[in-house]
Length: 298
Image 1 (cartoon, rainbow, N blue to C red):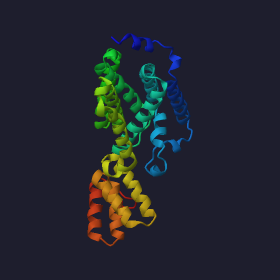
Image 2: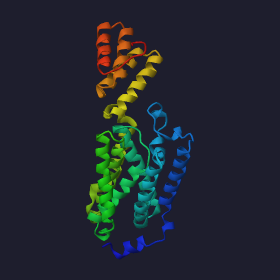
Image 3: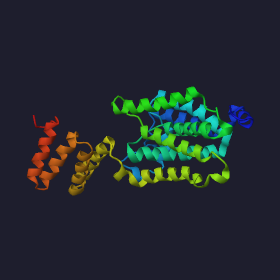
C-alpha cells in the first residue's frame, strides 16, 4: 500500500492536475478540429517536408485519427497523468510529458512511419507508475493491477494486429514511451546517494531517441512505410530531372520492399532513359511478375 504522504497527494482535488488537464484539453480541441476537416498539415510529421518542420515531433502527438483513438488516450491519460502530477508536481509533470512526447514520437519516426496521438505519452506515464510501484517502497500499490494488465495486454495485441496487417499501429511509440517511463521510475528508486549514473538514464535515452528521429532515419528506418516514401521521393526527383538520384531512391525502395511493383517499373523506366536497357528489361519483368499493369500495356 502506498505511504501516507502519497495517499494524501493522490487525494488532492482533480483540478490541481493542471499540466494533465491542459495537454488533454488541447489534444481534444485540435483533434476535434482535424476530425471536422480543418487543415492541420503544418502540425503533422510528413516525409516530404520533414526537415523544415521539426516541431511536428511534438505537435503530431496532439492529433488523433479517430474519436475512439482520442477517447482512449484522454481517459488513460487522465487516470495516469493525474496520479503522476499528484506525486511529482505540475512543473515536473509538464516537463515529463514534453520529454515523453518528443522521445516516443522521435523513435517512432526514426524506426517506422509518422504517427498521431498521445499513446507514447500515455505509455510513458504508465511505465513510470509501473516502475515506481515495483521499485519505490513508498509507492508500492500505486498502480491498479487491472490498469497494468490492460495496458501491457493492449501493447501486445497492437503488435500482433500490426504484424498480421489488420491495422497499422504506432507500436514503436508505445514501446519506446513505456521504456522511457520505466527508465525514469527505476532511476528514481533507491537512496539518492546510490543512484549515480541512473540520473542520466532517462535524459540520455530521450536524447538518443530525438537524435535518431532528427538525423538517423535514412539509415535506421527499414520499414514498409519508408519504402513507399522513397518511391514518392523518386517520383519527385524524376520530375525534377535528377535521374541518378531518382534511380537511387527507387532502388532503395525495392530493397526495403521487394514486392513494391511500382518501384520496379519506375526503376526500369529510369534505367531505360539512362541507356541501361538490359537492366531496364529485367526491372520491367520483375514489375510484371508482381502483377503491375502499366498504363497502355494492355
